[in-house]
Structures are given as C-alpha cells and as structure tokens.
Image (cartoon, rainbow, N blue to C red; front, side, top):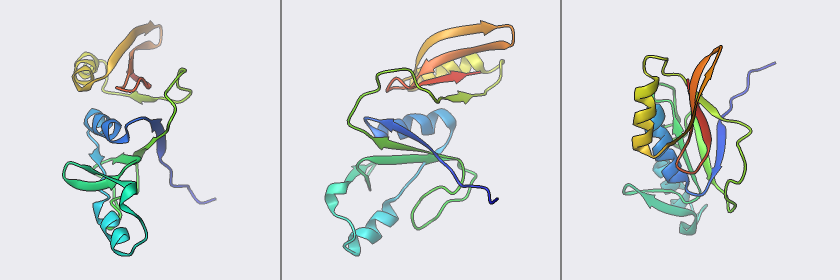
Length: 150
C-alpha cells in the first residue's frame, strides 16, 4: 500500500484568524495562495466573490492554512505538501467538546512559558491536569477548540 498524504481540517468561523493564531502558536507558515488565485482569476476559473484580502494579498474567503516551514510546498499554489492544517469556514458555531485535538509538546521545562505565550496569542487555559503519567494544560484556541500543552 502507498502511504497517503493528509492534512488536518478544522471547522471555524474565521479561517484567517485561526491560521494566524495557529501559525504563531506552532511556528508554522501561513500559506500564501495569491499566485494560484491570480492565475485562476486571469483564466476566468473563479470570481472575486470567493476572495478576501489578507495582509495586502488575495486569499480564499472561506479557507486558510498553515504548514510546517521546513517541508516542501507547491510554489504555484502555495499549498504545503507535508504537515499542514487547513481552516475552513462553516456557518455553525462549535457547541460540544472536540473529538479530535492537537497536543503540543514543548516539554515540562517549557510548558509554563508556552502556556503564557499561547495566552498572549489569544488562547485560554481551561484546566491543569496532574496524573500519575504526567501533567498537561488543557487550553482553548480563540474559537474555543481544545488542545493540550504537554
């Protein structure tokens, strides 16, 4: 069997705000799709109503993504070809606990500093968990999606 390429997709209200938060939180690069968008506009394949402007460049109105900065990406589309997270706008708000979440692993010596840095980016600590196997902090991103800092 061939290995599969994958990405994590997170439903959200504001994909560009989520991409900015998670890009800063993880040290990831916010993907720039403006070259692809320009090519598609020129070819008449898309219309401007699908777009917005983010930091002076054209971007998809309902989609944004971040990618690991050291992994390859397609220079024409701006799409990461490795570890990436796609944020897609959905009409409904988050209402229950996530069934899937990210665990960040800065290590026990950097946990508290990482929690403080994430708070400064807009995350909210929910609770500190101490268990026989270790401890972690459960946090929520700016839209309330839970994640853990180990």
